[in-house]
Length: 613
Image 1: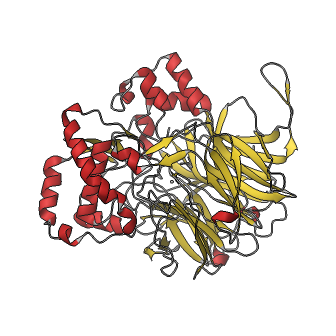
Image 2: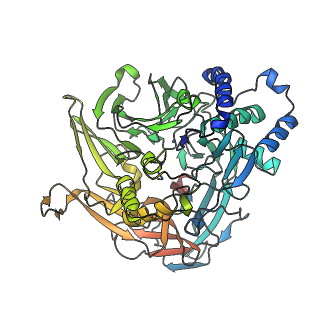
Image 3: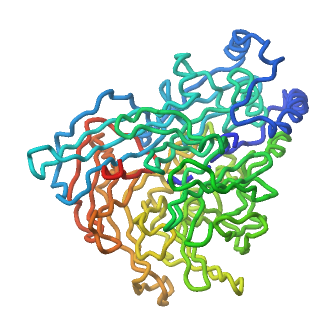
């Protein structure tokens, strides 16, 4: 969700065909004039200099035109979405005073940090104009880091001192808008095609960039430096102790484009594998960064013939795993009034296996059944096979499912006001209850593909935002942990909140890949080859985000450690951090840390041990 959901900040957006017959001729004219500009955008760097003739246009005149033509409208939140609302920065660090239970003595000293969307100026916006409507998506919003610092008090033995702090990631575009003290960038991620084209063009004229750089998805470490990232831009280096933004990371000028939110370290070498997707050629480039983070040791165009919306990349001891699925980004499709992002179940899907320093010609491709994957659990080599485990969807909910709009004639403006009948909710269940664990085995010699779903087939839970012990990235592992959504609750929630808001995760699952459990299907047949799954369910109306595995410093077993997660109790409007013993997974949490400030639901988290600082 996480999350999952992702370059023209085109990730996770959905653009519908405009229904403005009055302006059909205007749309055609504007599209004709914009097409040459958009076609040649490949000649612009990620942050472009506005052409000289454009610079001569007064910025005040442009602002006046925007103010006169466009109306900013706040996107409302329903009561069930209240913890998606932004919060203010709290300033200095705040000491935590209430802890239920006890933080283990052997818990590592360090920082638990999570990224997430925290929109400036009160929340996400829509805009209305003569060109139609355009909107932010819920995944937008400026990034805010929430950090919990675990230290021991000097001279007091094993007594823990826990501090909390939050702070915005100050990207270039964040500072542009903050200095204006009001919204400046027009929403351009969703809406009528003509409106999206015009808002994008006006953003380019006024600010020199097509969209905001949000940096709200993930946090990672490389070369003993720390970065915040969303994949529509390059990472921002962060001072992990103060959360101050130090600047963009370009790998000494070698990478100045989009950067995956899930880079992966190669086992044993520590080199970092990254990728960047682009709406114009080259559609996908891959890079390998040295272990110290100082140089790009390998960079290659993979020669794709389409732009895919790909959120993840995988690694093994010898290979890089590349996902090429039919969720595509197409500017030409947008120009003629279609969707910028579209999932096409009739298009091809394939998984590519490439040597670490290979090129497009060295990739071995394996055709698979069309599907959508936002998050990989892990990849590893097993004799002649490369094993890929991931959260697989039968289709994409990005863009929003066409079936709902077409079959029931629902507009996005009316969805929150609709009362859904039983049949409608059933359709939603069929569409949404599909994020489940999948395993592909790709035989490098015979080119055979084996696929299986190793967890229960009753679809009681949706599983997403996977995590493992990071020592096993790229290596064969026994355990994985995933955030859980109850399918029934999610279908009902989504039916009432389809126009905005993210799924809420009410528990965490632990998967035992090397243990089997017997399960009886609905037709009384035994389901073979299902793995053991344990569940840790939070109290009613308590939901989590940014869950991670924290390993014991001297742990021996793969699951020697804890699951740590930001949670929010919607009954009390209180935010917390849970610490769960990964070995005694279904028992009560060993500690619940009560936070001094509300923490909105967010995306991915990480734990940075102090011995690495």
